Every structure is written in structure tokens, then in C-alpha cells.
Length: 444
Image (cartoon, rainbow, N blue to C red):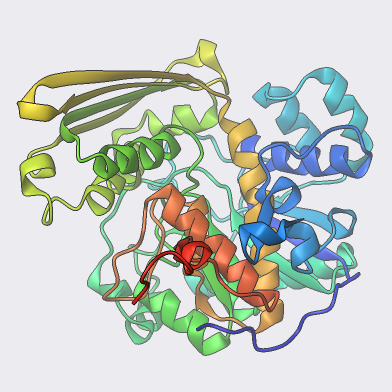
């Protein structure tokens, strides 16, 4: 059984949450935390703030808040820093994004007007739909890394933070399959030295963070710590990593519905998914090469959940279609449509129709908070490399080479809560239930 290396005590040190990308998601996250600090709202959607864990048997009636079970950083100790390829401060971004009302923005204007991004790393071939005006003037990957590492040190000083975590919330980059030049740490180092064109900005942020000993999570589909080379670096540097691509809306629903179909052994013929989205993320995804990166993470969840190799009669011939359409009038209020063609007893067909009118950044913001706090917890425990117990938050969760990552939301939740139980010195819960009936059943 996994055990924590040490018993953690609560910390009162400041924690800097650094976000490459100062857009709708990151500013909604920051504004939400500042509103919570003022007692002006509720942390709805946050596992760390509202989630509970049952301890022991049901008869013991011990249920505690997660934030009381393990010593997470307190929200009052969080401070924010960001990079972006546009020069707007956080308040300007919030007003442009149109996620929050002017009433809420005004409540946090004083705090968030101080969040001014440092110049970002930009490759115009990888993010084509944004006119960058606030970029680093570095000419070589090694220069960019050193500039980012200095930024991290400067952020910690400026924010008076003893610790930091990095959560990437930047735009989706154009899709490129991982190349051989990024397959190992040794080959990555050579690629960095040669200023190789395969290296994307997100990878540079990840490399800089790991070299600075900063826990790193990727909330986008961009290549970074999903690569074995950076996983090797994370283990070598003793830094926890997590990712990739936040599981917030349509894909979250897939990881709920698909397990239900498999649990009841209902067949699946096809799953058609489309989205309309009007924010900057939607504009970037209007580029087919950028959409391909998102398609890979959105389309990959069904196979690992349904296991067609085990249930060929039910899931070996599923037609899975995913699309995203940029529609400016919708703004951040994304709409996801799903048509699910299933079949049941004797092969008779049925359908499920789902129309999820959601708010993209409202769903994503609490995930950024939870990821940051859990990554910081892992760092303080001395854990390193892939944090598979955090799979709950990601479309394409990472697992050790040779393991199939779990995508079933409920298995992921059990994994998350059992890990927290172990951290707190409590026993994991199997939900077996037989021990309640031991006097009546011949339990082997």
C-alpha cells in the first residue's frame, strides 16, 4: 500500500499559483479565489473546498471535509502570477472574456488589476489565431528556458511566496505527434540544444518549472509532461506532475455515461459529439491543426472505459465523431450536443440525447484550484513524477508506462479519495460490504 513519506503539518506559507496563459479560465479561477477570500461566494465545483471523504465503516458515521482531512494550503495564502502573449492585465481579460458580471469583477478589481502577465513564449506556427504583442524576445530554446526560470524566481519574490505550482491554461497549440527527438530526456536535451522545431512553448514552460523544482500540471492538450522525456526529468528532479487537458464539460459527461452503459452491458453503435464555443479558446480551435490536438484528448476516453477487447459484441464497432465550431455570439457559454446510439436486449436500438448548455470557464476554474492545491500537497509529501491519483481532473490522464490510465470518473474518484485516506493515515475503503453480514454469511 502507498504510504506518505511523512506526516504533514498545516502550512501558513504563501503559495504562488503560476499560470502560463492569462485568459478566461485562469482569470475566472483567480477572481473566484479572491471572492472566496472575502466571503462573497461559495466554492461550488471545488473538490478540495466542498468535497467530503467517509472514514471507516458506514456504521461509524465519520465523514469529513477533504480540506479538514489533509493539510492543504489555505485559500488566504494563495497568490497569482501569469505569462501571456497579450499584454492585458487580469481585469482587462475578465471584461473582454465576459464570464463574470461587472458586479463581481468590481469586487476583485483592486486585487486582480495587480496581476499583470510577464511576456509569454510564442511560436506563431503553433498558435495561429491570436495576434501576439507581449512575447519574450528570446531566439533560442535555452534562452527561453532561462528567462522562464528567472521569471519563476522573480514571481516568488514579488509575491512573497515560499512555494509555487504551475498550471498551464494557455491556448491550444497545433497538433504534432510526439517525435523521436522528444522520446527520452537525453534526446530532449539535444533537441533543446539544436533549437529543434518540434519543441512547443508548453514544453518549455514545463521544462523550466521542473528544473526549478516547481510542480507542474497541464490543463491543455498541448504536449508537455505526457512525454516520457519530461516524466523522466520530473522523477530525476523529484517533482510531481499531472495532466493533461481539463475534464470539465462534454468529456466529463462521457466519463459518466459510458461507465453506466458498460455497467449495464448495453451496447454502443455510435457517439456523435459537437460543441459551439465563442471565446478565445473557440477562436483558436477554429484552426483545424489546433482542433486536432483537442480531438485527440476528447476522443480517447471511450475505448479505455468500454474495453472493446473484452466486450467485442458491445463495443468493437463504435463510430465516435467529435467536432468543435467557433460561434462568437455564444462567448464563454459553450453548448455541447451528444447523440448516443445504443442497443439493448436482443439488439434492439435506442438513443440518448444530451444537450449541455454549460459555461466553459465556470466549470474549469475550480479544477485549476483543486489541481494546484493537490499538486502542492504532493510536493510537500515528497512525491514525484506522475500523480495518477489526480486523474479525476483530466481528459487524458497519465499513468506509468505499461499501465492503462483509468477514465471512468467514478473509479478515478475512488482512487482520489483512497489516496487522501492513506495520506491521513486512514484505511482505504473497498466498498465490499460483506463484513457487515459476517455473522450470517459463510465468508471465505
